[in-house]
Image (cartoon, rainbow, N blue to C red; front, side, top):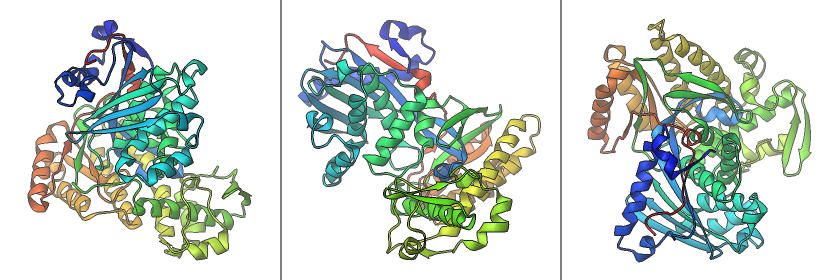
Length: 493
């Protein structure tokens, strides 16, 4: 991440992106809580970073199976303001849904004590439900201090973090990734650590997997860190390679409509489907006579054919050779007795759970083909306007596939129905559920002039369901585009 000093900000192309953080910093002077008014001191520099939410246009849950995904960074963002301090403590103040939450802990256990591993920190937060929101931030601090320049590593130098955000939580637009990426960029800068945007995103994913306990793929963190405004990030999740950016053609826009149904990537539905996909890969590998090696608590499959990723299985070979071998449903206990486990490092097959193996394995294979076709059509859309209808049909097919896995919801289904009813005549071509599913946000392809129609659909949906339907209509820069701002003499102290 590039570093920008305050005196350089006036010439910075994304200077407006930092203004909300500077406004929040100034507003601390008027906070009634004296701890907030004096949260930052004058003697240490302040590091400010921002990271956006994301709209999952195509790819979604196929990321953990190695698919290509197409992701748009949103205009809503999370800002992290970080300052080192003399006291060996981690202090966090987070403004969440209009209120301030506070968290504090000693740093020594994170660095050299009983909480120095991600697993130990995860277990510590698991029994502290009221503070579990802080696991994402403290996990970032732990990672950065353990990998910092030796001059900044010790627990004798603490960290203060203030978090402010316009990314709504639990709505399927990657609020946790925006939090992790913004915090990681600022904390790493304060520690003198040079991280590439891709490395930063991968570190954030590890924090979410190992400390927060959410079995997410890589696409959210990579989009928040590496995304570019008004372009779709093309990311091949094997494990996370940026392959380029696809410009949204002039005259068209991707919108998001929040269903008002809270989405949790750590929820059982998402985890069940992810586990089922890895079960499907294990069964396919067995049918293909690939060598399986026990590697600690997990399996390792020697796979020169698909390189360990379901998304590399073609739809043709899947339907001809493997689909019929996969059970529609399979009990965990039966799978473990026959196959021993999976290659997934962040989920485990539960003996008493039933898994939708066939649908969960079929989804990433079909989604990979849809994504490739979608990108080709989008690149041709400026010269072939009729392609918009096929683009929409691919989104509808992706939505149906989510439902086939069990990740649909009545709210997102209704929004997709309303978009389809409006149709191309009103500038709307397609829609799909996004991210981890089971609620959250619907992505919509429409013309740039269709925003009024989108907002009317959101209003009608709210009237029908009594659920607030937020609209996402703007894209924004990724964290790497804006960098990290350094204030040598912070205000608000």
